[in-house]
Length: 103
Image 1 (cartoon, rainbow, N blue to C red):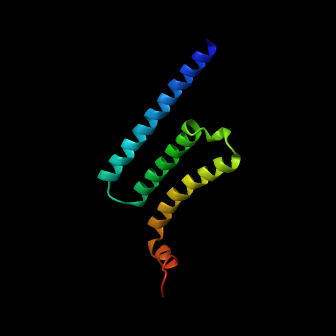
Image 2 (cartoon, rainbow, N blue to C red):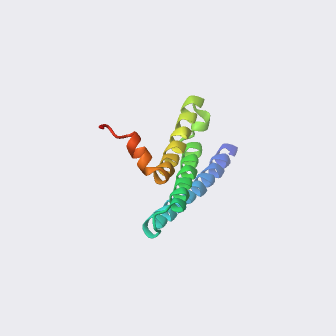
């Protein structure tokens, strides 16, 4: 009986996390559609990406109990790309020059 009660409570928490994920997704899509591009908007959406990634990694993928290597690699992945988006906004010419293939 307690096992059933525990899974129901865990299911309620997952429902809350899922609702938070959906709300953040709708909010970021709304911001991206309506706001003028800018550094602040890029930072806000990047922060939402990190928050959503942490919720998915910790509560839906259950990587907290996986190998620390996999857990930290996934976290690094979802911190790197939002940071890269902000850096591209701040230094577009420099990054374009660094990634240019030809002379």
